[in-house]
Image (cartoon, rainbow, N blue to C red; front, side):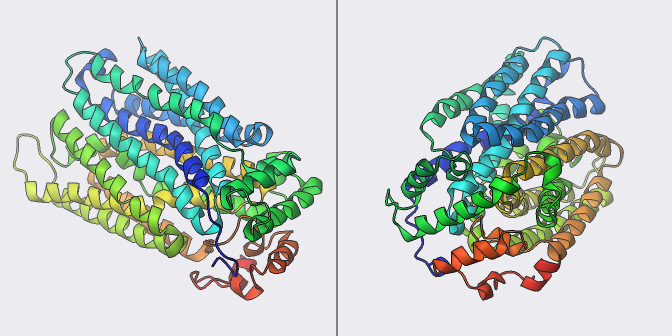
Length: 507
């Protein structure tokens, strides 16, 4: 039962759309993984005149500036042409950027290609999570959006192993092939989008009400438009659409005018900000350098360790797919964050006490212990902070603000990602073990912020988020839900959250 109603049948179409659209996440993850491997390849370094740590950081991070631009633009575009068409448009830009990188003859062309590819990834990241949230029933929404994170870490793992295999090629093909292979899944994504359904909430916002009802029925009741869940979902959407006809948000400035929406924007941007300062992309982008600093010298050794780290990330994202909606958002994130903080602390302590010394005495047990801590860090991130950065922003906004709010949170992710990409190479070169202590401290701070400020959202429909966050439509949505026997006021303060309803309302 879901809040007093039988759970929807949830057609295979929901799972297909969710999983297929996640190819965009695979492409994002692949680029993260492929660049970390390419940066240590001898033929790449020679071709681009041995860039120092500052240039390596900029070559990596200019992609993230493009993603920042793409994430900001995606909100307006998504509201106009829809989630599905936005994904297709992003794929065309992706082809352009990837082709420029693969055929790059100088560093300027390489960076231009990375910037364009970043624009497409920013557009993907915003639209895919919104699309997944709008197609999924409440009791499966966390799992559905977690497929985005699962696809990201799968892409990272695939890229790591392709990079490891291509490192044996004794020519420039060693780095051009891994870059060019990205085109294959992007072509599948583009043409597959033709058979995916439109978001029912977007259809309603465009006045295509019958099509929206039919889509809901196909997704959740095998075509039965009179199914109780379908009727409840449709009525809640329509109630919100009626409100939005007079209160629609046509600019980003308007998102901040309503206290309830402004609160949600800050929470969504905050969770993406915090996710980046846990240090995860320091590990994913610069994993080979991290492993080299811990004593795994040689290109192949560091790439092998990086590939194993990718496998760990994929395996430990699976629990999030299975149990995220049962465990809840807060408990999962805080438990994973504690493990990440401890792993960073131990790794830093080991490398401070037993730093790697080239051609000198090395305590290999301690250094391998630091490598093991990076595996544990990745495991903890993968089931907790990894999914939450995509799930929370995509589920807390009303339809009128969802595209723009998620757009702002996505842009925040990539802006902070850019900052991390710029500073980490310098930190690893200058303070080495201090990098781990720094991220230990940031993980502790991130956990405390989640504990004190983020309410639990599991098992609430997208429209019922108005009740949790005290939105302008809270009373009307509550009436519609109660008319369908779906909720009572008492149930809004869920058992899973240690934050009471009063605390959420007063936040």
